[in-house]
Image (cartoon, rainbow, N blue to C red; front, side):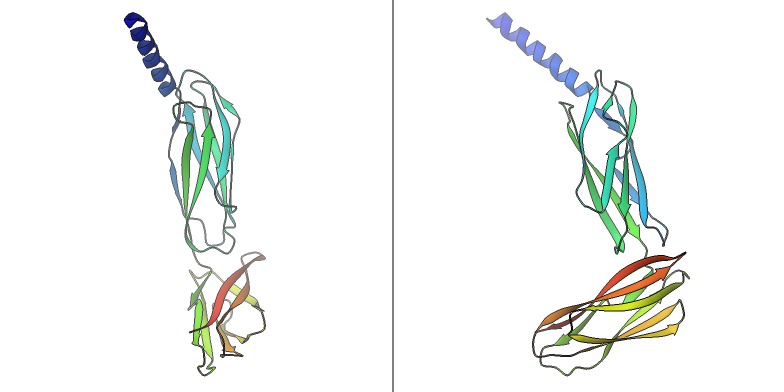
Length: 220
């Protein structure tokens, strides 16, 4: 009986070592990206190789955010074979540092899941100061303004201002074409708390468009 137990233990060690030997080796788990100011999509690749002794299948590639897409270049990788995860981040209305995760699941028994991280630093087309305007409930409806300045000498044209709801007045002033704008905001009612969304439609580059967001808030 003792000999059998030792045999099983030895076999278990061999199996464990074999499993540990079969795994994907990644060139990096984190990518730090700095796209151009007019970027719409930001591509990224994570390369790996199968350092094990038997094939490994990619079971799932799942970005945790809808703004990120990712796929493997194939489904199964033989021992010694290289592959890559191709990812793409959609800038949309986002600015500043964005950190997104991609979960990759495989049939590797020793390590069947890995997280890849994309850090994207998105420059601002227009710097807003401030992004949120505040009034107190019951106060006087004094006009307040949002200053918009194009960054990095990149011309930007404000084409329209949209207000969601009917609780504020807005007026757009072009201070310097393609460079500087001011949005004056006056609330219609200060008797209750609410938040109004201001959408700022802009045009830049060769016919590219984007919508930025600001807020007018009445609070306690």
